[in-house]
Length: 157
Image (tube, rainbow, N blue to C red; front, side, top):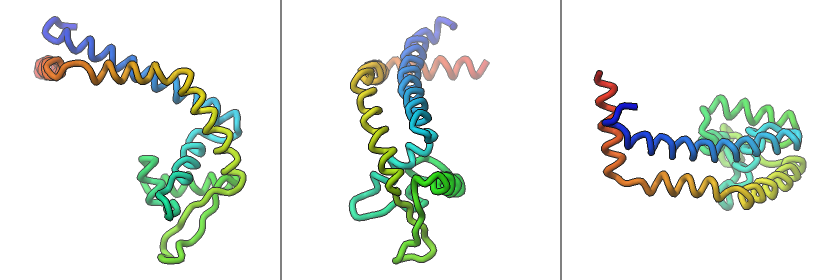
């Protein structure tokens, strides 16, 4: 890498370490979910539904927002989870145009097994994620600015 952006190498390495630490956790999550017989997206869906705000049930819109999906993709995900017996849809009694999504007993059981496994994984290896994130955030503002300027210079060539 050119010398004028040598500071960006440090940030790039730190960012790569952070990404790697996250990927290790996400890889664990994928494997643990599959061992439970569900996709990782279904596990994430179960979490979203279970953590809907107090007194509220998860709408398709809420699911889409929390899972960072387009509305139609959230509909498809909920439909697949419903076919698997993990969730069920019901009509919102206050707005008949709106679907709400609730966990089934099977979905609750899967979630009850996967959450402790994920928390145990974070207890065992979460320090790697935190260390990488803290290092990334601790790098100076001046270095960030210098890195951005160096990258812009490269892009202008």
